[in-house]
Length: 351
Image (tube, rainbow, N blue to C red; front, side, top):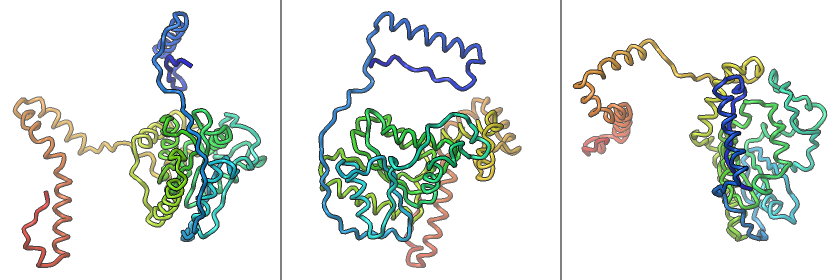
């Protein structure tokens, strides 16, 4: 279908006259485009399906979990499908048994009711009538988590959508902090940049470590075997070392938005979020100490003097890297001292 554009509104934008006018203008332009049968540039090409039947080779199953709890959550485990074979091949990479949760077998009473009853204590109204709460408890208890899904149109299956929506009873609390996560996707993920960003953004905001996404797009069974075994090894290695990649823009920006909303207008409703954020140091607002305010005021006045401003321009980069250069010198000195006299006289300096 042709895509005209979108209007992104905050919850209470309709209470503000300028935002009401913005929405009205968007609507007017939208209906004008329809009336004029306006041509719209295509944002995405149609998905090109490339038939491939994965035929996994036997696995030695030599990899140890090292006592780590590994759980695979999939919406398809039928070995007549590529995804089912990928899940089975990944499972057989390990010498130890790992648990596979089939979302089709999880009893789900219904979708998220949007009642916000969970805001006070993270308890869903469905908690005692289906298996969603217990399934999420399994995920939270895992050390290594693999999420497996098949592309349907431009998203994952409706079962995955339903399960993820029902996870909203956690509200804005990250539940996968520090966990090692891998994704198995059957389908044309490379052609759907938005879906990839949704998956990456979800896990970043969960503060988990996304180790890798493996798809069947390589269309080569031997290569896919290697990728699945590599993913298994990397997941355990990262779990052993405790490695979590540095946060990116998606998690930093999302974290700040949630932080500000939970601290402010949403705190009354999302009491459980507020307690978690306060207990775990999420309220990391910029610190405005008296010394910092005084320094900024003084430099703000000095920068109005042309001569000082010119000198300031010359020294910007030097002053920005000064703390880092100092640290490098200190570390270099400590390394020389540890290396002994033979190293001390080599004349090497940090740059």
